[in-house]
Length: 338
Image 1: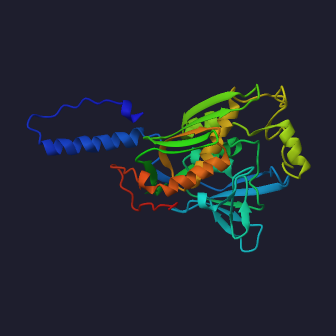
Image 2: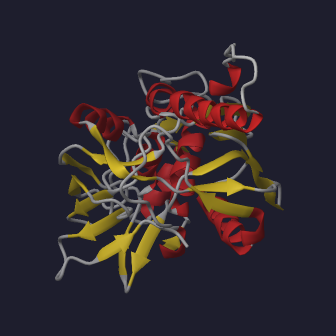
Image 3: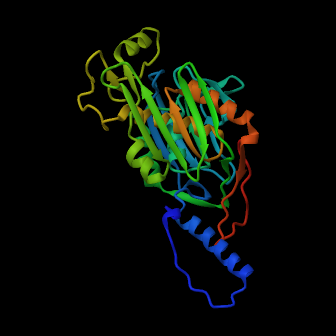
């Protein structure tokens, strides 16, 4: 990290103090750029990326295409199976349901189960993407963000000539209710600590902290799968839900065992997947955030409640760019969320 780096510099006697200060400030800015783990320029895809998979609840095959988008476009979902191909921006104020997944909607049109794909965009620091799909539901793939992450990284990520805007906290923001908690604290990076607590003997209390950065996300978080309890899966299927759910796209637990033959991908896969969901939910801020997010027993609904509180406390944060002293951009970004 940049703040662990120390340079010794020799200056000639009689150096103007003002000039010295300017040089030191410039060098500090350069070091921030070199060692900052988060990209400071907006990013999109290098080319189109295509997916096909099953909708978790519909059980139907979904075709999804990701396309490069211009600067300041954000993430927008386009339902090309409907007349006039309606567009829904991926923002917190377009969330219409959080009971089983994160669902966004506009004028009666919805796109459901967006959290894994959105976590992939945020985890890889991708700002601008056109998401086209021919159904109301993003394909569940293998229950994680791994397939999205791998194919996007293979296709390539393109840096754009506009700075990213970041939310920067000036003071903590917290929300606590009925044992659930989400807090955001000032930080120089995007960090998440996720805590879960289940009565089931295979889960119990688990905690995971990561700094959200491309390589860490791909290696430590993206492959963590959604999970559920057998009695809950059976209940949902009786009522026409989770029609596409199977051991191929979820970790399923009965009273004593994990039913998947291959077991877990990580020893603490449960909390890692909850952290992945959190990344996806917080991406609906519309811009990246520099903060340490701490959650305890939270889920889609409570994360969304926190985002509402966040925007109601504008005095607690500001938006800013991280300027590159070596390569000033030709255009600047605008806020996509406010």
